Amino acid sequence: GPWCLLHLAPRPVGLTRSMLPHCALCAHEDVVRRAHQQAAAQQQPHHSSTIVAQQLQDLHALHAKLGDEAVTTCLHRSWGSPAFLPTVISILGTHSRWPNLTFDETLLVTKFVGMGFPEDESIRVLSSVSGDQGKALEKLEASHPPASRAPASPSGPTPSCATPTTQPAPPRASVPAKLFSQSSYLAAYQRTAPPEQGYELLAKVHRLCCLFAAAKVRDEAADVRSRAAAAADRFFNDLQRQLDSRSGHLADVGTAATRIWSSAVTLRLGPPGDLIGEYEFAQMLNEVLRGDRASELLDCAVVVARAINRHCVQGTYTGWPDGPLGIGNRQSDKKDTTFRGGALRRDLIDWFAPGKKYRTNMFVASSFRRAAAEKFECRAGASVDKDPVRWVFKFEHERCLHVNFLRPGAESTCTNELEFLLTPGSVLVVESVQRSSSLHDAPHEIRVRVSPDNALEPL
Image (tube, rainbow, N blue to C red; front, side, top):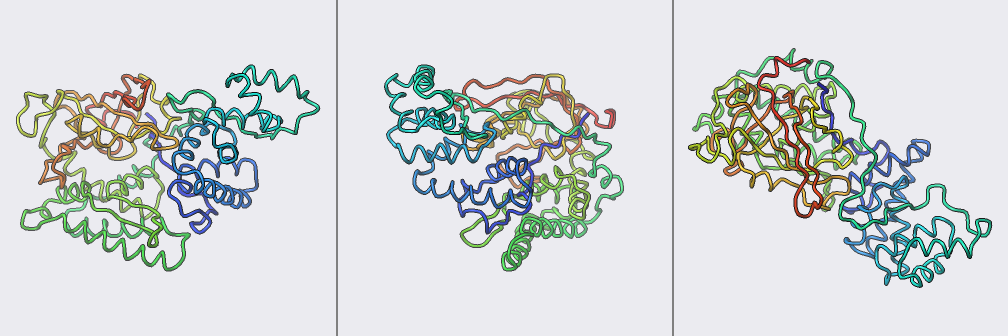
């Protein structure tokens, strides 16, 4: 099946941190990436970064005037526009000039202006027909023949004017049909021996932290890069503190690796007051694995993966979801079933069609408890291009050879997640997709069946 590369792109080339507004919303990676992709498609690459930087500064000025709610709502409602950022700026500009309009009225006025009709007359006509879009457009067209209208913008604002019970969806994504056999991960895994001693694992963990931090601040000023290197060292020291030699954590490489994986300590990158990113080790490791770029960084990640797999693949089960009647590490909400909460890019939901078989491109954690998974579901509206999603994993009873339970206090540093960890390359088959009609009430739900033995599946 396809090696599922559902990863986020890094910050666009040419857009340095200094060019972006110091604002978590206006310089959000999703906003920057989408705006840059659209601009690059219309401009020379070296011009697109300058254009997007200026647009983001314009957005930030409107953000300072109108506040979080107006900007967040506008980003959501305009996400599917072919001229995303210019559309957002245009709508917010109308809103700032006519603050008494409702948001839907603002969208319509902006749309009419983009068609070449005068702004003040669009507002007057819309008010005279009680907000009826069709009647307003008829009146405007009757009083303004095409020859008398202002030139319409070739990529003028065309926001959705529907009530936002669901978010507008970008065009369906094209997921690279890359086979597992073609992945850089598999090539590195096959040539890499698993670490036998704790010091071998820790050396690669430290190198992974340093390389990851350096890559994240590569385009920043020298003082930012220096602070990032120091932060990576501190982060590594914090990870080492999760290992207690008196408890035998270092004597078993698999246990040491899973404790590092489950650690909640974070690597914080960026100058004071301007956070570039904050990462737990599990986030860091999976981002490198999803990227699948042949490099020293991936080689280090593969050594860590080899160590984690000492527990997940080569060990006996330390727990299994036996349902409500299970005892100890075998008690779960539902027999042979685990749950995972998270977020999924809105344009990828259709990719998960019933019957689709694919391999994971990272470690996939799920929980014996539905409530534990729900804590990781993103809040509806919290992301401009992702929706909350719940994954339900179905296993054949004690027949999966590439998963294991992380016992709280032993393989896991967390006490209440009850984590069941699948290895990269695990084969999943989509059984059903249930779209939520109201994401504020319930997430989308995707049910998958887990193959019992990856080695029996095509590469």
